[in-house]
Image (tube, rainbow, N blue to C red):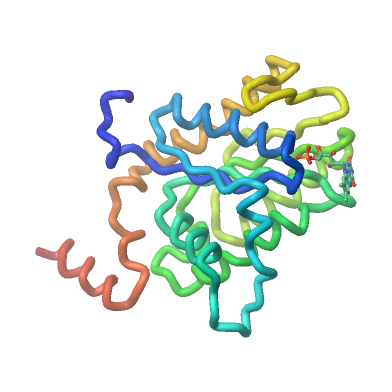
Length: 217
Ligand SMILES: Cc1cc2nc3c(=O)[nH]c(=O)nc-3n(C[C@H](O)[C@H](O)[C@H](O)COP(=O)(O)O)c2cc1C
């Protein structure tokens, strides 16, 4: 897999974290992205600081900020995603949900929203109840966006598992689970060759026409 040249590697986008500098959610996401890289993917992280720079998504306002456009375009190009949220009051955090709401801008794409893409889901919470229930909520959101939640998702109880630095996790089993989430996201893209299919290059009707002509010739 390492012999794949850069452009033939699937691109896995990570979205998640909190506003905290030492966000365990973002660190957990980092473990999963490294798992995706080990499985042959390129990765890009949109962490808490970036998500905090996004304005509240307002569908009626046609203006989009540079940050919004950057996220939208990255997800448009993505072959798979990994989304990581803390459990906040029994649900997905507003910070992460706002980023996902911003993906409404992909509704008219040939590949709308997260269509055809595997999506690894990660939840951190101060207890098992929210870790489990918010993981189900996040997977429901992914379904609504037409994504394919990976078979394995990770619910992490951060009262028990600590992420003291970017690359340390107090429980090797949790580290392995996070790597599995990333690995499954990358493997799905490789298995379905989404990274070799040019559909994501044709977001506009003109682009779609160009693609049809290309495929027909
Ligand atoms: C506003 C807020 C609401 C929270 N609600 C819950 C909750 O309902 N259930 C829970 O188990 N933990 C809850 N937590 C704890 C966080 O889910 C937990 O600390 C998480 O690991 C924080 O992630 P971070 O380290 O990336 O900031 C809450 C934390 C905050 C700040």
